[in-house]
Image 1 (cartoon, rainbow, N blue to C red):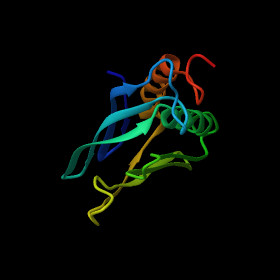
Image 2: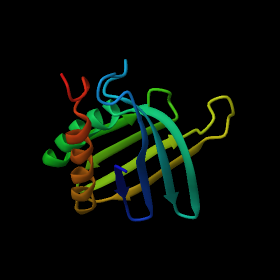
Image 3: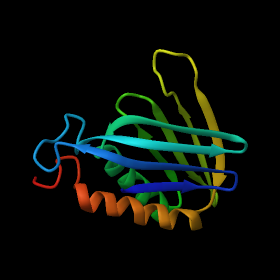
Length: 146
């Protein structure tokens, strides 16, 4: 299973692709291939283990933004799942990285985890390596065949 982690001083987010739909012939309207992912968010004493649907295009777009921020040590990279379960912002600023987001398992229930924690660029080398492996396997917004 492909996954990527975002680690920090007091938290970690792990997103693991559990199932791909239509690979390699049927791409998603949202880019890449539709998929089911598992997410774990650990911040302080809070822990979420859940799942949601997204597309492989989301990690692809996130990788492109995150790589640019990492290279320039400045900027913001967003990961927004198309069903809006997960909103994640990575902000590079003055040598620190702020990871801020919110997760809502069931969009019909007002039960939302909002979180933030700090990280630094040394943690993100591994994250970028993981994301590039996902991009290499599933391609970009048009999948691997286009």
